[in-house]
Length: 415
Image (cartoon, rainbow, N blue to C red):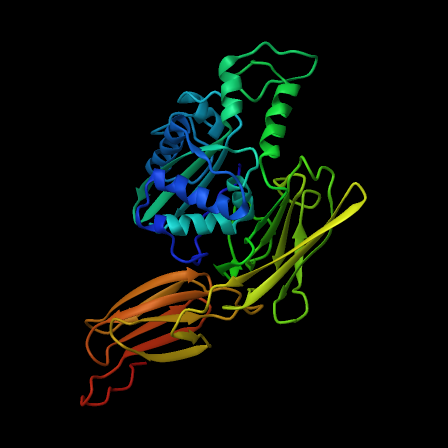
């Protein structure tokens, strides 16, 4: 996988058990939890893949670079590409898929970020993957997670180095210059496909707490768009749906409203050529409404026969108490209580811009972004204390701490 994710978002489900112990082994449990929701078999732990993943996490932390590629001569250099790093530590196959996430500490945030980014989502949901390793390290206040997936049978085939038979070979699946017959590779793929479901969808049917929006992935699947609603994906098993043609892919609120406007991305129009046959994504143009249920429907054709599937999911409820930001906003807050602030996207202000804080003496503000339109603020300090938020978009927000009962009224805020 050659994509890179940089930004995190809302939690995509009820807080999972694995959020409390973010270790590489727990990362395997997290990925398997996701795969189980789609009907895929669990991955096994692979020590060499884990060593390569940890080595790359360490490299990124030491060099302050965020990339799938390493540079010769840099501290911690292990191999230029993910497949090079896997070979360097004893894995035999180059057929690997790498995901990277950097952001605030927490495996739950890393997983939700990667699942919201479609190229990374498909790496976790590879039909052919059956083993994985992971690594994690800190870089300042952030955590760097690296996930590396592979195929056990392919690794064993490369390790055995069987003589290539037939007239067609691959040279890029194992060690340099090692020829592997096309028939052998296709046999491994078909056996993996035979064990997988016919159709995979995300979000899964009946899932809840899905984020309302998508913002960042490198490379961007829809260049020029600052945000979209949460992307909905459909994957068709190549063994059972070879040559499938998508006829319809829609998303609508469960309460009978019209289908949402959006764009379908597939192999033929993918600007980054990352999507494979049978992989389809619907991007709603607008954020999905908090707390609402939605129904997705896909229709496709295989060998002249039409098939369809409909499933539903629910978006996470709005955090409370929630304040909607306007050009000039003010709010009274209780000391120690978290309040949430939301900027409704508009053509001239689609997302929040960088903010600068100004505060009165003794007041401390803890600010956390939920996504690029929503943040929380928690104030501590004396009665009548205040914090001013100044945004580059010329918006402002003034927060004041409630006076205690019986105390004198607060003076007006300074200009």
